[in-house]
Image (cartoon, rainbow, N blue to C red; front, side):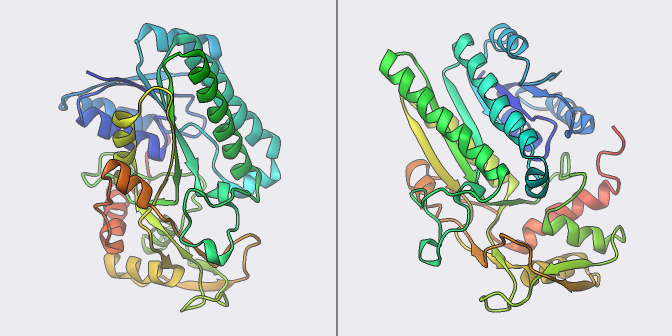
Length: 347
């Protein structure tokens, strides 16, 4: 039974990763300080584990506690760390950059120190397409060799962790010690567990699909579309939406594929995009409800089009997304929201 530590286990992507690992028969330890995660998510994981081939244990704690993390890694004999714990609001990162550098970059550094001390040989890092910044049009779809030039502290904090991993793998390779790492650069993650056990509950919510669904559910008055004068077919921004289940399957694929001394970098996305208006229409179709929308000004730093070239992970690991229809992705998110109108509640 593979022993995996998942940081940020009470968050959106981390909880879905835990669910998939439990289903695949792993012994999962979920670590989260609950500053932005939800105890309701970990309770759902504990319930699911009672009926699954794997096991789940939740530990409330912080990756900033290096000593505590070393003890946890050693005591549970962890073989793989999947690192999701991070702050992820671009606007907040601009307003409070040092918070992001301390939590995202500093926290990852302390975690990697603990991983090194405990001798954990495998590390999978939750990176982001925000490390690419605003690529020129001739680099879209974005491949892994596209120059990384992030335009906000969130993207820069994630890029710092990528650099740490590059140096850590090189040091291990030189020393002949067992270690390998993979960085997965996500594009827009969407949807929820198809069985409705865990879902997306950000506070505040900033993602397009759940905002549309909140309007449909009567929790917001209208969607604000930020700009309709972009050089795209309908004038609104185009983005690549990968289902959260497909994303966590990519994590499982790299976990099993890594070999000592390797450093892998993969984009994870569908390889094409939908515009804001197309997402809005999809949400209207799925919910059967009118979703009012108003027009607002462009937001600084919003490129017209961003979508992935994800051919590398498909070629190397035979990964391909199962959720390729936007309506199907939206439907999983809508089912979760209908069943959990207050999200995970007050925890």
